[in-house]
Length: 131
Image (tube, rainbow, N blue to C red; front, side, top):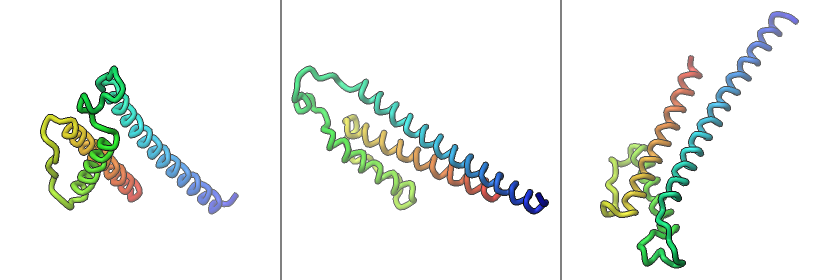
């Protein structure tokens, strides 16, 4: 094996290790994000009021799943616009103290946290590529 072949083999091994490390970091970040969402989802189910009768959502003033999904979507869009610098931090459109208000705030800040983690990871990846 000549020295050129050895250098090429060393470069290939180095690239393979770098790709493996980046893949590992990506998988680990995804696992942490999924675990956090699973924890919040389980905590949400555990803290929900227990209804004893069927059809009790209207009577207790509970939010329908469709309404909750729409509120989450609104909050995520607002967070993405705010993180993109398109708008200043938006005001919560729901009355203070309501279920909608709490869901909107939680989703908004969770989305901002995820966006911040993604940009930090991208910056760290860019810095490591230039090093």
